[in-house]
Image 1 (cartoon, rainbow, N blue to C red):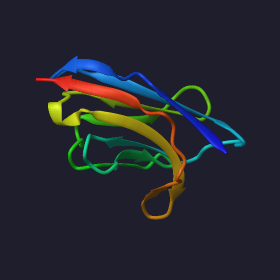
Image 2: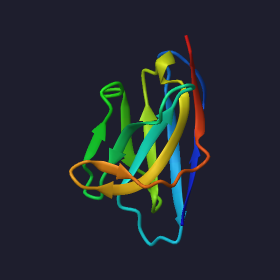
Image 3: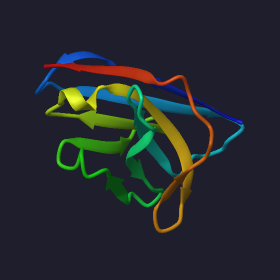
Length: 120
């Protein structure tokens, strides 16, 4: 079982920035593929960004050019730098671990998430 702990959310004005962090721990030696997802009220959880073991990244069209996913300095960590935030980015953000096979497939293993609220 993998435990995921997200942090860094908060309240920010439109146009501002936030940096989210996630640490994976538990019965793992090394996490190779990780992703960030978000879920707004009344909407399905969606993949925002993912990074593979080889450094390949992909992004949802809605965040391309504004968000950047990267590995943290500590083992089994991943960050999400979010710039030029918009009110529609408001959601609970979750990180995940997963499999990369042409594209990213998250495992059904979730942390508590971190709330991001962008005011207009």
